[in-house]
Amino acid sequence: MIDINFYMKINDLKKRLMQGEKMEQALVREALEAARSPQPVVFNIETTNACNMRCQMCPRTTLMTRPIETLPRAVFEKIVAEMEPFTPEQWQKWQLFAQQNYGISPEEMSENHFFLYILPRVVILHGYGDPLLDKQIAKRVELLTAKGIPSYFSCNPANIDVAKSEALFASGLTYIKYSIESVDDQKHQDIRGQASNFSESYQKILKLLELKKKQGYQTEIVITMIDFDNSWQEHDYQKLQTAFADKDVYLYMKSLDQRWYTQSKEQKPTQSIHWTEFCQF
Image 1 (cartoon, rainbow, N blue to C red):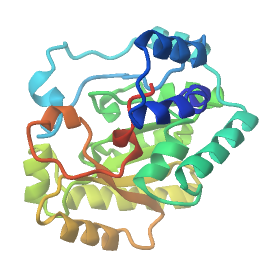
Image 2: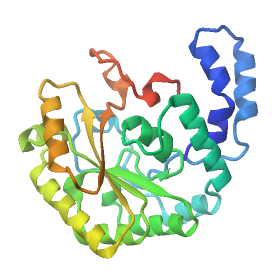
Image 3: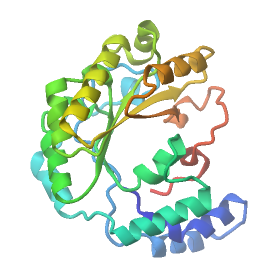
């Protein structure tokens, strides 16, 4: 979840700073401190850092030195017990703010729509691991659902197990995102590692869509392709759009995260709100 009240309160200050206005650091800190929630707002919970991929763009692949662990259930339950979902009034105020300040409609399907209308209200359940490798993930989602808190995580479609996915859908998972970087199996493996591919992943997602329709599950399936600015990528993205045409999915091209990790490389300009404003978490 995003501290939407903080986000709205500092909007004018943020604009002034981004336009180059000089302010004393002490005054900026004081203004930010006055605007933030006195209680922590949980943005995401890394339930596990286990992952079987070797993604070329992920710092986990080359930099992570932490042991592989899974968050104890008692700790997760304690966190959830201290959280509350936004009220309808708070969310309505935020949606109006998003439309007025960014011109993004609630009905759009884009990276910026995802950032403004989905990420603020959900608890993200991934970090540097794949939640599909967390054996407790369905129970964790169930706890959030019972509390009225929407949930979401991103994962690798190669790790899809249809039976386990049904348990996730039944637990009330609000959004699940599958990252597909190419419609060519070899290119996909080059980016994500040998455990990944497109062909099998695509068939698994089609089975999940059938399951969702048959059982009436409300989990929204999100498909993204990360924008690496490769010469072949526009063609692959068009083929990905064709593959999921008329399918019940939320599909968009996603800007490359971890931009600091590739800061020595040439980077194309981004229109992503997340990467054109300073961090407000």
